[in-house]
Amino acid sequence: MSNAVSAMQGAVYQGYVEVREMGLRGMITLRGDISSAAVKKAVKEACGVDVPGQREITVSGESGAAWMSPDELLLMMPYEGVEEALRKVETALKGKHFLAVNVSDARAVFQLQGEKAREIIAKLCPVDMAPEATGPGEIRRTRMAQIAAAFWMVDEETIRVVCFRSVAEYAFNLLKDAAEPGGEAGIFA
Image (cartoon, rainbow, N blue to C red; front, side, top):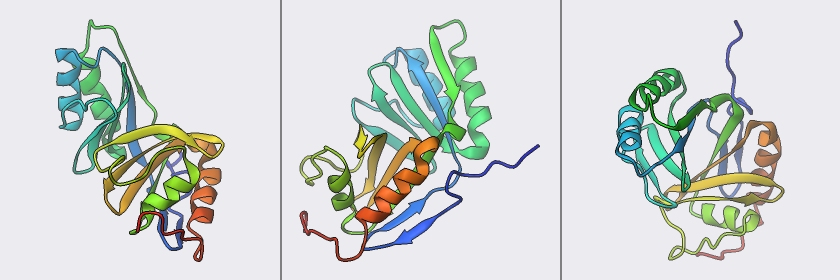
């Protein structure tokens, strides 16, 4: 049996913002009636958090749930716990109409760290990154240059980006290029 490795094996770039590949992360795509009591129970049992509202993410430690669409959540947990979390979801939703899939090995997660992290996303995504428009606890699905991506702010200086593993190197290079020293625009300073 082979050992699982992350897409960029923990690559780090230190520009005017640090860009870091976060390693292996457990992720489950859950589709169904996310307003139902059964789904709320399943998410609580699998991740220990409540179902988030529209364009929100709820996090507790290394686990969380992100609103992806009116009938879709992205559940996150440590990589080693994804199979147990998936079993909890399947048990809680037995007999219901739902889809739950382990997508851990199909995704890559990056972290931007630094006081100008907003600027990196503003350069690459068609999203208003002004503090009054986007803040911690919110998630956005968008385009990052030529690829699909989602991002959320952990805090005012930390942003996590998730994309397909197949485009991880492209995503890392985009983020790295946007964080090149000397490229600061000071938009949100």
